[in-house]
Every structure is written in C-alpha cells, then in structure tokens.
Image (cartoon, rainbow, N blue to C red; front, side, top):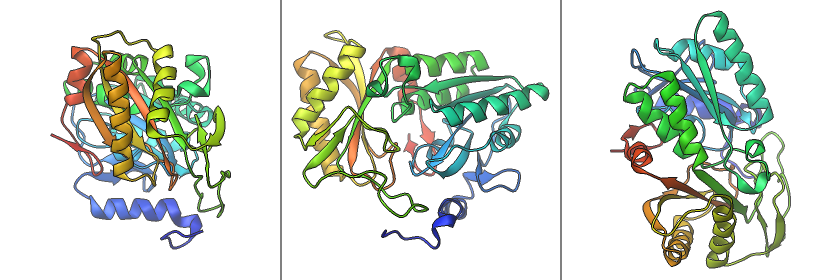
Length: 330
C-alpha cells in the first residue's frame, strides 16, 4: 500500500483536520466531533440540508458543504456510514428555523442512521424530510432499490438552490426529488482501490480487464471483460440510461462525466466527446457539460456517466452559484 498518510486508523480524522485548517472561513465542526462537518456560517430562516456518507469519495459527500449547496455532512470512516448521533448533532448546529432536509445516498446503513437522527429531532420539534439519491441504473431493476452515486450532484444543486432562494422545506424536498427523478448514472472501473485500514485492493482485475456497472465501494457490476474504447463505453452506457429514462429528440440534458479518483482529465474529456457525439446522433441537446471528479472511490481508475434531463426549472438550479472548499461556480 502506497499512500501519503500517518497511520491508517487516523486516515479520516487527519484528512478532516487538514480541511478545517485550510478552510476555516468556510467550514467547521460541531459537538467537539471532527466528523460533524458543517458550514461555517448558517443563513437564518433557510432550510438546512444535511448529507452524509463514508470517507473515500471526495468531493462527495462533505465537499458539497458550502454556500448554495449543503449545510452539513456526517462523515463516516472509509466506506462507512456516519452515526445517527453525529447526524443529529450536525442538524442541531445548522438548523436555522425552517426545518431540515436529509439528502443522501440509498445505502442501508445511511438510511438506518438518518432515520434514527430524524426520530431524535422530532423529539426536539424540528421537522425533517428525507430524500435519497438512487441513480445507479445497473445496481437494480427496481428504481427504489438502486444505489446513489454521482448523479446526486444534481439533487444537491437543486435542493441547495431552492433552499438558498428561500423555499420551504417541502419545496426544497420537491426540488431534490425532481432532480433525482430525472437523473441516471452508469459507471465502470479499470482498477480497484485500497482502503487504508485494510491495506490491500478490495477486488481484483486483470491488466487488460475492466468492470462495467460496479459500485463506488467495489460492489459487483454487470460484467468483467476486456477494456473497451471510449466510444464503446459511451454507447453501452447511454443505451442503458436512455432505455431506463427515454429522452426525446430535441430535448435537453446536462451531462456529468465523473472520474473515480485516478482517471486523467484528458481521458474524461475524451469520454465526454464520445458521449456528446452519441447524443448528437440522436438529436439530444447537451445544455451543460460537467467534467471532473465529483464522486470518487479512493484511487480507483474509471469513470461514470450521469445524464440529467432538464427543463427551465432544473437549468436554473444547475446554474445557481455555489462556493465550497471543493466546488466553486459563479
């Protein structure tokens, strides 16, 4: 294992200390717990939005905490869920008088702990609504059982914009749901990654082999086989996405090309070009392209493609200015 760390067991907390030291004007922690990650200055009267998940996916999840996006994030260990108590402590810190939206990925541990936090907040007479991202098409035929992956970016953008504009808790939740209903993701990996506390790869792939449809924690995909070209990966991914979420000729989409941690920017733009040409061939217009790392898996080499079907409302949310230590959009 080759990593720039001190001790594997301190990986998450050392990372958090670095972020707090680098960005004290933007983020802080609550309840004397480094893993209760919060925006530095809350906006009175605004719906508070809280997410959470395991370390190893930066900028997902905590990287979205900042102006115009999320107000707090429960930080778990590498690929581990944050606790219900942490989520509760974050909520009591950032709640600003308009209720709390829990917005997170569709994973069993996260659901259990966010539900626990909601029950605790209910006893404090703080209203909560929960919305989960479930955009990974290949993870399950049932849309409600799918994993949440990079497509949650669009849900964060929608909810964050609506909250910053003064929307009610119900309106902010509906904005998140609308984005979630209109986004689909397919991903693929060329290499595994190494969890520091484990010290070895979480799965194996041959030198000329890739995994198509796998999850961001190394969950099995739909096939392992020879590495395909960018054009082939774009076509296979988009065929799956557009079968699940039809987009008519002349309609517009936002495209998120997401690197999983060790994929060069050059490769991501090659992949976007393949996606763009495929969509153009079907008469589908790309309203906005977002290319970079938005939901990684440690140092995994690979990428995901997310398509969000947009109307004027969703365009406004996507274009809304945001400012976090990791994401700045003016």
